[in-house]
Length: 284
Image (cartoon, rainbow, N blue to C red; front, side):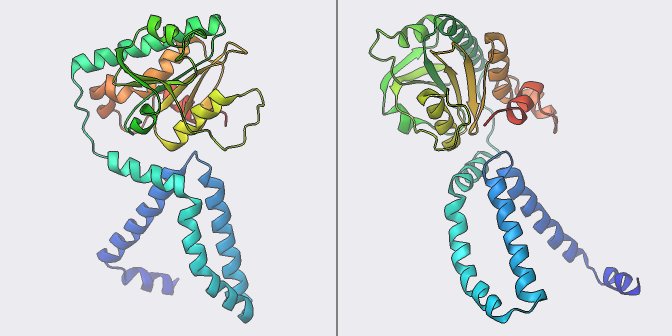
């Protein structure tokens, strides 16, 4: 007890700042990787470090300690390679931090109409059992995928989206990409996810939707031609079997900070119901 009091008396304000800074860094790392596949890898690395520390110091295993000391530099090099997707996503988030929402009321109205158009088009496509893949660009640019397709730059409407995915149209095979409420390209090629999918009924469209959302912060909407179901993918996760009304609510939840900027900035830490559901109840 006396030793603890002696230690507390020697703590300076600089030490408190130092401890707070280190804690904030660890909190930021955990916050950035939450909900991703990196969580299990990070947990495994932490357990491995603890085990190695116990074996090499507590039990004084000299030979094992020498091996750990020599292997540690290689482990430090391997960590960025293992966590490369998560690190890139974290750096993108840092780059977007502090970005002002400067969209005008007219631009927000266009975006709102485009979300309604996507929901209505998916309603018709699902009823007709026509496959579709619609990707909505957010903060991370999708120009590299836009260049793989056919440039359109057209106003978003349910009729145009339905026509683009008609099996008799040459542009139906691929993804349609929306930017700021407008259709910028069709028949785009997207990266396929390499993650294991438990449901074997998920085809290439779902893998492409997961792939592009693993690489960027985009939102992808998938209509299955086999089941006539609607799914939404974001951040490498997918929410399945949505009805058109709920689809529109989920999409608006992702764009809430743009459609309702004042309400968004007043909100401190409470997430909207649909946004929280899309992050926590999503199925890998």
